[in-house]
Length: 424
Image (cartoon, rainbow, N blue to C red; front, top):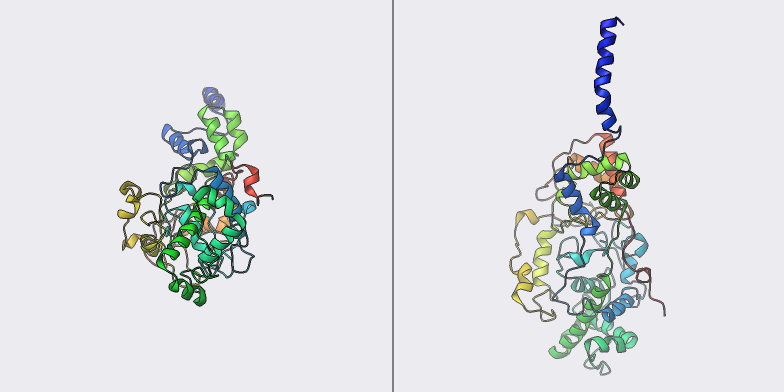
């Protein structure tokens, strides 16, 4: 190397040295003010207590929660005595079951959604066909593929096993001793005997049984409201970012995980649907998820919107604890017949997503890699119009995004005794 060129190189290095010293080799921690606000919006520290539910005056009642806890784990609330709410909503699996399709008395056509954090959502199930947790809790009990029982048998069990607890909360149960008025099995279900018995009952007796049935759902909601996610390593990172603690930030997330976070809020635009501290906007989106060939066509929110309006336990029903117009606005202004609802499903929370496989509304994908590949490719929807566009992520970027998603795992901020069947 000639002397003039060597001198130029030395001068260049000398000039650059202060800049290099000021900038660490690893710089994933530099965020714009707008990006910092986006990260803060996802932080668990911004998750308030679940909002009140005017349709359930017992939603925040501790005695109702204790009763709901028992009901949630009680297998007697099924036709064969083997299925409880916890059969599909298993605490050790983030209150899901690890199956592509929920398995109760039979096999359903949808994957089990977690109940963790669902108290924050107006709409329940993948298609939003229920508008409260208490209403949601009642559906599986009479579904022939899930618990497969009927409301008369559910109320009879409550009277036998939980009568004093029920009546201390809700008042007297109907006197079920007269089987001519209250048959052993009865309800508006598919079972022909139970269905015929229900049709022969007096209207006021049907109403009394249905009201007791609804109250049991309200107790289950009071329990499920306590199932709330806790902090993950991502939340530790955001908390450290807010106080500009670089060491704590680097201890919380690796470089690849931070780059995955950048993709999440930036290029990959995951935050469009997976927003807020629960990483879901609780709305409905068609993302072109493939159909399962063995299942009937699933129109998602298109059918769910019609079902919630017709639901006998919605916020406008006589079993709701509110008849205030403002508390029913979500139903009054609900759009039906909207083409955007066709095959649209609710995006699940991504908290503890690594523990929630398989993925999508019918368990179409076994791994997070497959989910990311689907969003990368953005295929056409089987029905309706997909909202996706190809992401154009590199292999490394896909890996970084997955690494970040795994950093969303964390314990629930729920007392340990509520994460198992009650003792005694």
